[in-house]
Length: 354
Image 1 (cartoon, rainbow, N blue to C red):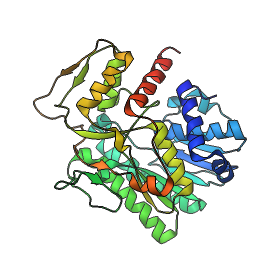
Image 2 (image 1 turned 180 degrees about the horizontal axis):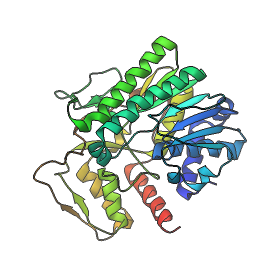
Image 3 (image 1 turned 90 degrees about the vertical axis):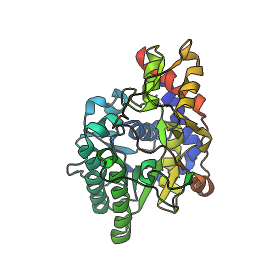
Image 4 (image 1 turned 30 degrees about the vertical axis):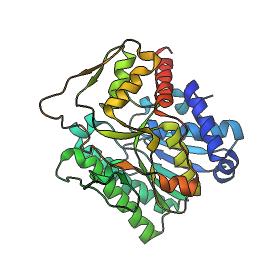
């Protein structure tokens, strides 16, 4: 059993929604490389693969690449099917034996890191992608997947509301150091396309909207993390803006389901993953989280700085459209914002009470 009740339930649901038979038939005796395996997205992929091993004896081997193995929980570290590799993805990666699937999920997602370490943020997505793609070419993998971001679209021009995979891109200022994240992701996507064209590597790109859930850090500076931090510590939620910026939030279990559907069933290269039913402003998100039972008596307060903080996301508008993945792969998110954040808080409480 996975170390967390919520994560255990989530992995069971992911396997059900992806069709256990299809997963078993395609992944039995496979070997994975997951970069960023201690992060929220990477760890959920690992948990799901280990759940397949546990329930269906699939004998999936996992190379879990992390910068700091202390951040991996013991369930992963001590599993006989996991080979932990402590290595920064910007350094060359040497792995003996076969690799069938590579999922490159290693990238800073914290605004604090993007602000303080823009070079390292860029390198994780550019040099890290180059290293993992070269390994994919060498190992002749079945699928190479890059975890990208809504930020590659930038700020929409004019009245554009939705971003589609084949639609117009918005504006990204390349001279803004904070945009090393967005520009790094864009360069990485170009590399994926180029390796597909020149070397016939079967590359997949998953562009994610804001993702949250068990495994996210509540200290990384993103608004949803700040709100959860406030709730866990029984403090009022603090807004550092008027809260008008609009975003979509997708629960990690729904995101992981999409990742496996794309990995095994997709014909195209690029897919947006977002829950358009969970479009909210930052203020609305704060209001929804406050309504959860864990936040009795708390309220929203404003502490707006005179000058905008440099580490915050520069893009205020533009929503990912997930019509393509819904139409082609039948993906459908099942957790509302209220349900997803309630599950996240239950997980955090479980962790605190360990």
